[in-house]
Amino acid sequence: MASMTTVRRAEQAYAEQLAHLEACAACRQERHCEVGTRIRRAVSAARAAAAARPSDGEDS
Ligand SMILES: [Zn+2]
Picture 1 (cartoon, rainbow, N blue to C red):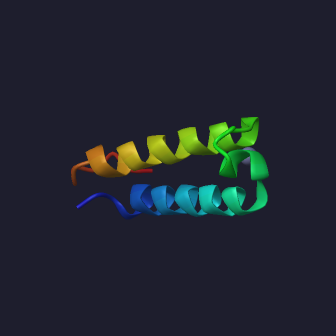
Picture 2: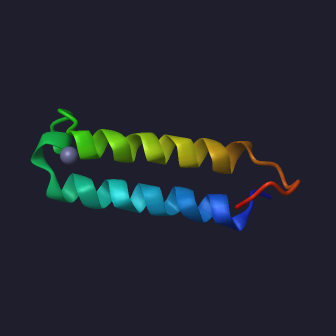
């Protein structure tokens, strides 16, 4: 199972993305602002890490 840390991080990044979408009209219209772009990148990186990471340890 993926480490708790990476899964948590992915969830947090996604929550942050949703919160940003709530707040940012540009991102809701898919005209991604700089902050939104950074968050999206963080979300996909965190998801990739959570999905790719097998149980053998390199978490944190
Ligand atoms: Zn935005």
